[in-house]
Amino acid sequence: RIWSAGCSSGEEPYTLGMLLSEFAEGTPGFDFSIIGTDISTTVLDVAKKAIYDEDKIGLIPQEMMRKYLLRSRNKDAGKVRINPALRSKVRFERLNFMEKNFGFRVPFDIIFCRNVIIYFDFETQQKLLNKFMNYLEEGSYLFMGHSETLYGMGLPLNHLAPATYQRI
Image 1: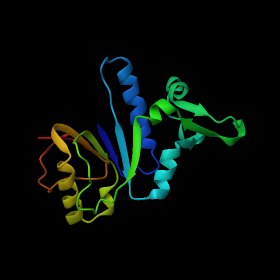
Image 2: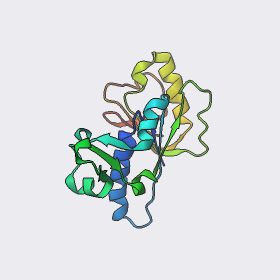
Image 3: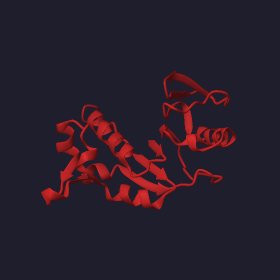
């Protein structure tokens, strides 16, 4: 179970879905689900449609493009869509981080919260990250943006690598 917090228009959750689908092909019994959340219904509508400009997919390897992307019938449109099998593994919901309870019933194995907390003051960041800890069990992972720091927050996390933490 993976949560992409502050997922914007969905590129991160779908990219994660591609990578996990590749892993699942060689790992019998492995399954995954991804939830992407954002406060903006406008960007979530884009994420749910899963239609993107071709210029956004340049870094995806050709083999993965063939597997996970559908080209527009109108070649001049310059659009691609995430295929239905991958879309079925990712869902999107609106979430305001200032809500008292996020409403998730089970914890996540991984939370991606990249380049989100930079918009909040330190006190709000600390409150938000403490709420995140309610959704990470021991051994689970938290990925932050490279410009974000958790220094001085006293969170139950081990710093493993830049922007990478593990719940203790």
